[in-house]
Amino acid sequence: MSGLPVSLIQALREVVGEAGLIADVERMHSYLADWRNAYRGQAALVLRPASTEQVAAVVRLCAEAGVALVPQGGNTGLCGGSIPDDLGAQVVLSLTRLNRIREVDAANETITVEAGVILQRLQEAAAEAGRLFPLSLGAEGSCTVGGNLATNAGGTAVLRYGNMRELTLGLEVVLPDGRIWDGLRALRKDNTGYDLKQLFIGSEGTLGIITAAVLKLFPAVRSLTTAWVALPSPRAAVELIGQMRGLCGDRLTGFELMSRQSLEFVLHHVSGVSDPFADAHPWYVLIELSDTQPDAPLNDMLEQGLGEAFERGVALDAVVAASEVQVRALWALREGISEAQNHEGPSLKHDISVPISRIPDFIARTDQALQQAFPGVRIVAYGHVGDGNLHYNVSKPLGAEDAAFKAQSEAIMQVIFDVTVNFAGSISAEHGLGQAKRDAARHYKDPLELELMRSIKRAFDPAGLMNPGKLL
Ligand code: FAD
Ligand code: MLT
Ligand code: ZN
Image (cartoon, rainbow, N blue to C red; front, top):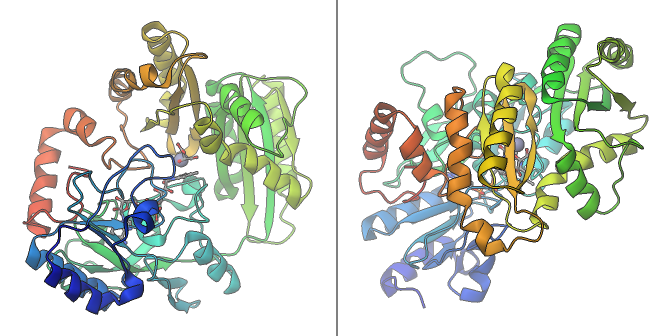
């Protein structure tokens, strides 16, 4: 039973209605653990308001009662940011009923959507208007715009279109005291002081509740070509991306790296996939070129780039997708890694970035340090080369016990983060800090930056009721 005062529960029920309040522990279940079951918590209630006004009223009531809120979208985050602590006193605030597309302004190339809209639905709405919303990631069928904003989500098209920060023009936010900030401006230029929306983007629910956003649209893609290329090394990947960028410019819209180990997990655990090549190779990249013109000569460009790469020994083998089905099959190999790694026991996820030029040395140095300190661990390295962002994940040695491996997770993380910082990198490039990397950030981030971040947190949320225990 919830430990909240009965009068508060009654007042909350009046705001959100019976459909918007979950007090039953069984029904709360899916809100209290992430999809990997890596994080679990307890909550006093789950609330599901259906409008910005309802969110504001809920936040006001909880602020007056001193009750902490944990915002939640699709619950696909990878660092435990949307999961409450295990004391059972926090309230999960699910935004999934705020799911309206409020406006498409094709002439302004913008779309205004509510926080609970699923990313895939947003992409489809853009397509219906003859436009592209370019954010694309493996969880797009379940993650929400609010979660994308709160984590500044990246994905596979960042090298061309930028991450959520670059895609956002305006926000509507319910502040920690329940006031509504209407920053839903659809402007590309606005120099009237601090850019407040950027504080909320990437704040992981610690400064306020995002309820709606104005997002940028782009011209629809009318030509597309996708290739799967085998490479001898990560250095070859860095050479190849430089070459393809020089040749294709902005037509290069995807360049995803994966190691043989990553591919083997996918081949083993994901149904309906197959290795595009007869022989095994140490590394692969998935290359996507696209253009707004129909019949753009993308295959010619790809052939020219790959031809030069073969001559220089940068590429070892390549296939080009000949149909939509084959395009999907190649992407399935890349997008299947997260799921596949789950079947191999606990996956220690590290979401680092370094300058693109330093990716090869980072991988070589970290591989060596890890194998020396933790012999037999399986390194599952893949990621977004164009962003310098590697998912340098680690699975347990074959035959090792889950518990023994988990007990080493902090020490493994330290090895990886030490090398990352040595390479002038970031310990979290894409997924955020949540509860997974909050303590590491305390250790690795500049103390002055942390002090400024704490001041911002105090200014917005002096009572500390917005997603406490996350990020800071
Ligand atoms: P949730 O998981 O529900 O929440 C994430 C954080 O945002 C939490 O801190 C939560 O409190 C906060 N939050 C949620 N909604 C709001 C709101 N309305 N207002 C304020 N705070 C809020 N991420 C990438 O960036 N790139 C990838 O390529 C990528 N690939 C993925 C692939 C898979 C298979 C999976 C499972 C995840 C992947 N992710 C990736 C991580 C995840 O999908 C993203 O972080 C996504 O943006 C989270 O959205 P969500 O709605 O599920 O948010
Ligand atoms: C991806 O790019 O596939 C995800 O961000 C990484 C992950 O699941 O670790
Ligand atoms: Zn990623």
